[in-house]
Length: 311
Image (cartoon, rainbow, N blue to C red):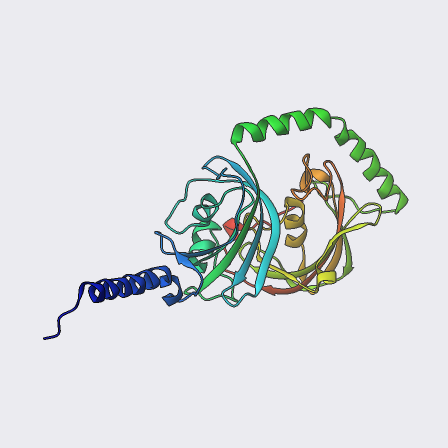
């Protein structure tokens, strides 16, 4: 039997150690998603940008984040900036758990269960372009983290500074309506609905998957957003949180497939007293949206959940 010298034994142990370290460090590449790490809850994640701040969000904090939802094959079905309050994860692998992993200025992509996200987080059905067994990608870029106290202090100071802006907006909107000779009456919420092209079939209802093109602009005609210019229609499940502002939800709920309409949203059903989280739309600012309902896929019908009983 061959005997190893001390040097040979040391070399042998070193080689075994290097192999072990290689396997340990590269274990991520033997998963279904190369480059991703697996969390304790079972979802996968990949950190794409490190932040200089150690300020991670805690339950109760408010965050501003750029969020992108896509299929596992990178087909984007939602992209936007949102300001929201983080809550305790209600189940292992929830999107709240993803938010809590990141600090301010950090960006990461997460692979989570599509079924859990839609049925448990959004409390709706899985869209028809996804299967219940599918996973989806969520890319989160944390712009700002604020404690609940700081958020409300900042909001209070800001609202005190602009407390007269609400009356000013009403004057500007009234002048615009008179100038454009708009004779239709607004809804009880203040929404103006001008039909350009009639649609067919039922109006949109809770749980339907809708695909729309929209262009948003100010009363002076300046554009601030356009899916047409990006050549990227917006698809979402109607009636659930984190989708669109209240005025657009009411607007789309009035539409039928194939319809094209113009909607005027006063700020109370638009971007409100704080404006958009991106800073593009100022506080107390009325906006105009031209919306075309390209496709409507019916979801489950439940009359008790119908959101379309507008005045």
